[in-house]
Image 1 (cartoon, rainbow, N blue to C red):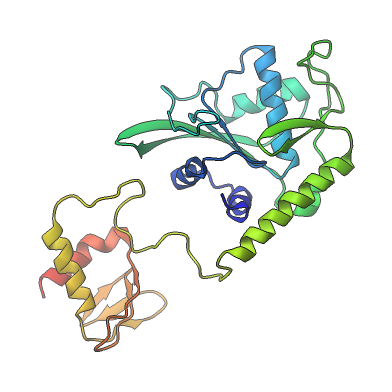
Image 2 (cartoon, helix red, strand yellow):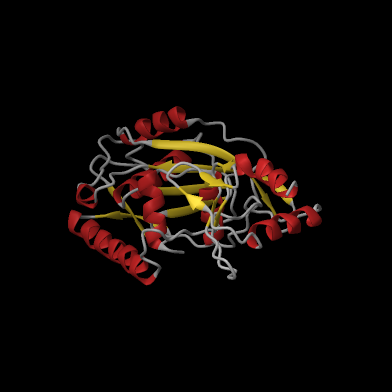
Length: 282
């Protein structure tokens, strides 16, 4: 798990299927990530627990709850059906329990995992992108079941500490925690490739994430690769299109030098079929 990547995903509000796959593959909970096998918030005990989690994520800069992953084992089991709550319903229930309007979104994605397609839900808790503004904690503004041991009381402040949600007694304790996790994120960013041009996954991959093998049409795939890497011409690249030999290949960027197998590729999936047949006709 890379704290720098997680922080950037949270700031960008990434709730795509690619984000879901990355979060499942983390196989570890932290201040910004939590797994749940199922989600039920119909009774007061369950709603209080869920609301405490949401307040805690809000106070550490936002985060994700992934529904469909077994706790502690991190096994991606999936869920049988979509959650019976949309984003508005979740926000209404959180407001009922703590009196605050917190930006929460929920989306469902199907992923191909372990030779089967499974359904998961991402609950995204939004917070300020600016670290300075995280220093102002979100605290419960109303009582909810205050006489019960599981209840929420006005003025309560919750934070994520490791993989658990805890109540804090002062803002100083919150600031100490924020200093620690932000320092970890900065350290992870420095430890990795800090180049602004670095990418996590090669953009030349034709297979969708989750598919490890290209099945069939190997001859066509081999012919396409050979047509590109053996072309002795120098491709001319401008800001919008790539022109070579009278053809215009929009979305394909290739740099080749005669006599060297030095190449860099960026394929646009929308144009790959057209590129393939243009190459094959040569």
